Image (cartoon, rainbow, N blue to C red; front, side, top):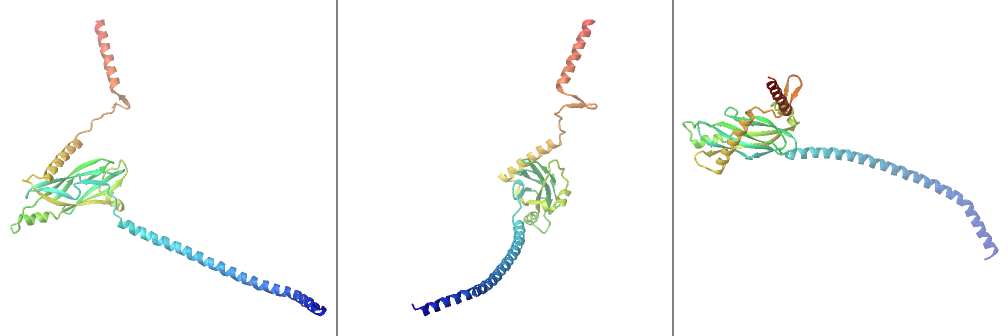
Length: 272
């Protein structure tokens, strides 16, 4: 390389070195502005995403609440009572007489349950008992009374029988606390907690023809009468007797007092 070429190269390199700081600063400034704009755009985009996410969460929560309430209304309530028979009430067909049916109810839940009967024919039907409270695992046989109308002149027994079969009985339940006494107002005060256990339909049986359903009905009616007699009997006190104000006399103390009394009588006889 010649000296002139070398001088021109060194001169051009110096010029480039002198121009480079201006180009670098300008490039840095523009790049910083671009970075700032990108950061602002990214931050703004993140805010929008956060807002949209929050709105999405709120809307999703609201929609899920609506769906859960709808699903809850569609799910049938869990029954607390087990009924036998489960769908029908069987009556012997005897026109012009009051006939009886029976249904066994057992509380298979873990809490105390109040029950209540309702019927579409309250003038010709009633239940015994009309309601009550069952402890967990406790069972009861309720007796249902119905008056069977005589057929009119212009209708047959079949017509009258089909008319009476339209009568329905509804059994409702309500979870209550232990020690709660049954009153019908319980079901009005807590309507949202009431569960319809079953709606029972009337089925008539031929009273003169023995069938398994008729035999089962007779057995349940006899058991219901036995339970009723037990409830009517006064309860026998098994605990200690209370005499006066706070004086407790148990069996052992009574025996000892009688024994001491006999001893005193023997001592008096000996003295005489």
